Length: 166
Image (cartoon, rainbow, N blue to C red; front, side, top):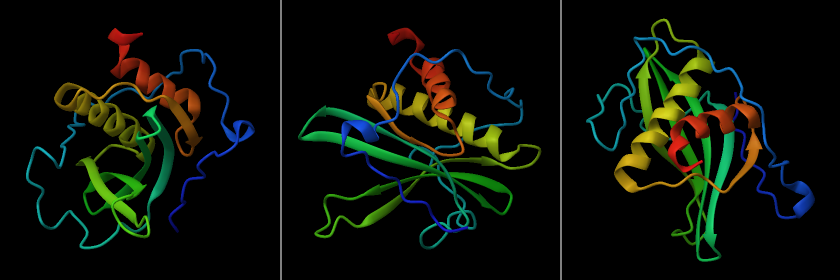
């Protein structure tokens, strides 16, 4: 499967409706699902690909836009790799002269007994919660695009992560 690059909305009519969504049922969390975040725990060398990930499933994109000079646009991808599910963030790096597409491994978990939708849901939820607790990450401002996760599912994941702020 080729990588789907996100479509960044540039016009108001391109922005998906940001409305109140009813609560969405998420798959139950398997007791065996333990998220590991690459930033805090060493990653076994046999899990991380040497280059960019292959065979990714696009989950969706969200955006933080505090001001014109402070933005973050993350696109999320799920990648099966051996016995693991890997959650990646893809983004255009403004620190490179050509805004090179960059991949960061965000989180991973063991695959055994966990389907891709469940892995995508709880890896994203746990990674956001971890970044909320360690880096004071606030809730995103905008859902730019849905993928395997619908806008309603992304919204429900955010509700569970930032429930104190709502």
